Length: 571
Image (tube, rainbow, N blue to C red; front, side):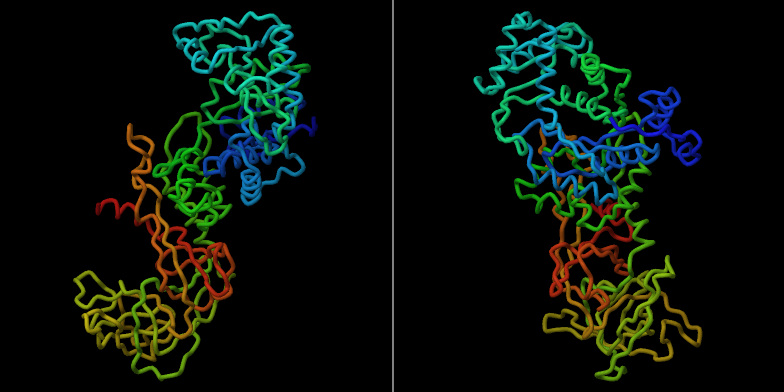
């Protein structure tokens, strides 16, 4: 096991300020000199799907604890079920952790690294009379488990001889028996008030190709058996896991008791998992969405996966800040997804490049502006960060504005453009609408306006005021783009909370709108995938991974304001 010098964390005011109950327990262990004053955590994902925002919280917690206390973190893949695991998932998980800003250095492990040692440990348990082979099927065994208030029934195979159990277990490993025909169980206590202690499964028969060990094994260890032992062999000091494993802790400790050979001992600590409203956080359900074609893959920007959030435009900083805001508790609860959306808006507000883009264009002709001419105007790149400087925005006789920024017969509280009205064009001039041009169907095709040359930069020398400022782009300079407007994938707060109703019934039919005729100022022409922008007045967007230099595609990360609540009220 790796050793590190004693931490001086108790003198660190920053740690004290942000201490949670896990920090306090670790501090107690350090003060007591446990495990040679080491802090060594691990993140143990199963490679059976892509990681989601809930896993991101766990990643931040485990790696964050190690950073906070001067310790180390291992990445260990729990690859104990080959029928569901793939190398693709392994690589995606590694990419996600790196993207979040964490590094396991040379400490990459797989539970399959320990298959030989786990097998030998199981042999030792059999020899010690603490494990036996059960010939019953899983359904029969479950019926014998009893209830929390009623003891279970012992298996008729519980008292087999050591020799018979060894023979059967080795034959299981050799592939002589069918899947489901036999299991290896720990012999603990069928009357325990903790159901997990009632002779739990240790090994089951699975005849599937393993992505690392190939066809060597025909039996695979259960998570509860493999997890604690892997922690022990790696020198993990604090095994931080979600709250549902609290009732598994006595079993975790029981296995360690059988293995322990020194004063060193890993400690399991549980915390409440992350639950978000309007979101599904089950990998099994997410896999269903992918396989059935309801989304366009694990990295669909509507998915709560880390790769989906990345593609949508979320940043590592925003997710880590979100995890910090959520905090660590011992009580299960549901976090409003708007907190996640606030976290990305908060970060991008400080860091995103501002540009102007028009998503639903209406042409404006400045009739008194010289034909064939154009000029460049100064625009601020980010008002929150002066160091980002300014850029030049081309202005010409023909512009696009948002169609929603004009009304032919505006109501009293509509302050944007209308016939005879004057408004400000951002960074440019005051314009007044003089004529509305329509096609044969009565649809408005363009506006004819005049501009006031004296108002360059958006200010009037005579002090007159206007009540609206509109964004715009120059027609001949604009970059035509595809824009994908993403919204929440579900329109119900708890899609899984309805008995006898398929969660997919609550999918939001407006979770994706694709706009093909959008125009963005030319600053974006050299943008690269995942570059972030704020389209002024519209929201935060990023360049999609499918983009090319000839076809730039933008994803809406999040709107500037919480339009979701208003849209739900209208319904």
